[in-house]
Length: 247
Image (cartoon, rainbow, N blue to C red; front, side, top):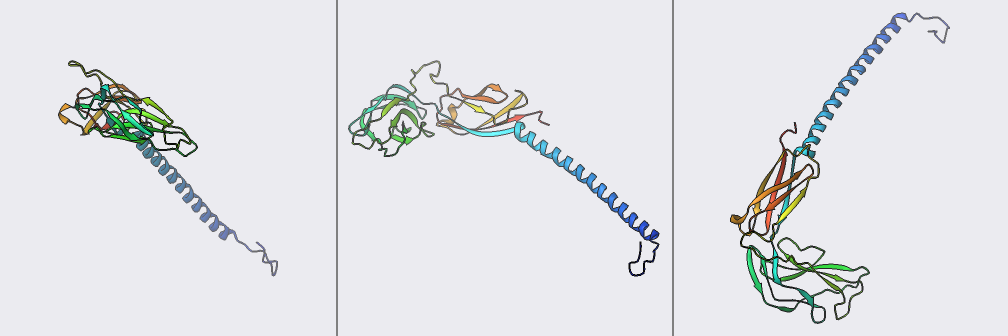
């Protein structure tokens, strides 16, 4: 090193050695920190992978609604007066009971549709036989669908100008076998490693808890089916699928 004021040469050997030692020490510390950081990241990834494995396939839960409703005879839906819909007399099994209903002319009115797109409604009966019309292609939980009603765009006249599509499930009662075997296929969000998993069921509600007989069928890696082999209606079931060898 040269002093700029006098151009004298300075001996900096010891000083340079000290600085080099500091540099080596800092580099060793940085290398150790990098190794520790890499190990921490590896452990974190292992923990994350384990949690993902548990989430994806080991334990999955959900809720299903399983109705047991069907029409024995009648209950056809037809156009009534003006914008009304009429329901024919008939017999149905719903709410765990067999019920008879008289004819109901002009039972419910169809809304107008001033919009630019067609609308679909579902006409359904509650367990006590009350008719309702709900927008959409499905009846809500507890409802027995009778018909789907399409209301075209711009239908605002005094007379209903749409179409009625039969949505009844018609079956004949049997002494020996239930005419309608309610079932619900559960699709698993994450496929199991194989089909050797267990399914646990808990009934939260039903029309008659004493007439519930659940069974799990058709297990696949990505789905299984819950069947109600009893006569209860309006089942609400919580399920849990657990794979025993997820570890």
